[in-house]
Length: 146
Length: 235
Image (cartoon, rainbow over all chains, first blue to last red; front, side, top):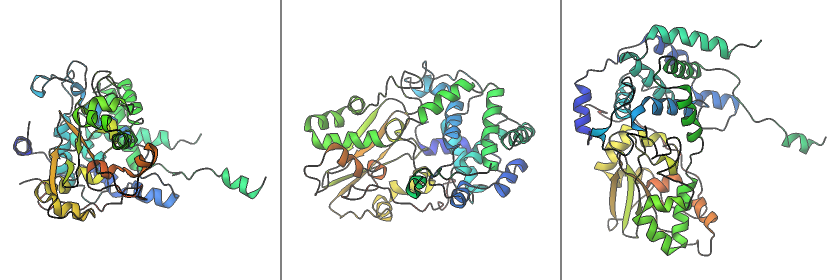
């Protein structure tokens, strides 16, 4: 896709569902954002420690765009190796829309993370149930003290 | 142990709690790996690569070009070749060793003059010359900047504190999947006799995007308020 209007038209036709997803809404409402945490603990780093991990997840999801067999081909000739990849342009379009409709009051990069998870659930790449279950396990692991 | 010694060995401040966002990030990542969307090794290679990136190589490229007219010619005609001199190999770099990921392999260096000012945007998403400039700032990603800088560049630059007189032409370059851009601003007065390192210090990230110009004594980017766009996407 070469310009925004073309991308816009295609993406609008897909009717992305920006309605509330309970698991993400809970994070949005109860999660402590980096701006607050860093101020409370006197940390200078402007970005949370997971920001690079999040960027890497987004890039890794774009799969075929950086595969050696694709990277220098014209876009129309590229073929994703993994059918389940999440195109970077489409992800960014959906992020803009989801931020505007649902996550506008969440700062960056927390809003990028919520939008990514929202996109992935709506596309069926992961389920909300799986995510909620995984979050419980991760939370238990990260907070384990002995 | 002296008080001064103890002061020097104070541990750095750290956030001593796990946020829900941290949990969410890790959960999404682990689910991706479990479902085979990418491998743990893919992610590790990406992360290691990302941690090597920052704006210093681009700042040195500009500083070097200010000092060396021959290098400047190379920079404006072949940005990829000039990047090699500041340690950035667009074609053979990690993580693919064959062209940098979504950043493609075509860097163009836009030379400002006293009557021409360049500024960079990505109207489509947030394409950015990450291999040589690191992660994009938040405001660069916003629909507000992306839509408005192409329509009203002078007004938007003025909001960044950059007031341009009417006789200076403004060119907005739109990044895309094939090409990435950095701006080579005009070397400011008062920097005669400076070394490359001294010059690179005043070539901030914002100067390289084009929303600021280098100033003697200014080595940090200003904090930008991020405003939501009016009618942000359905237009």
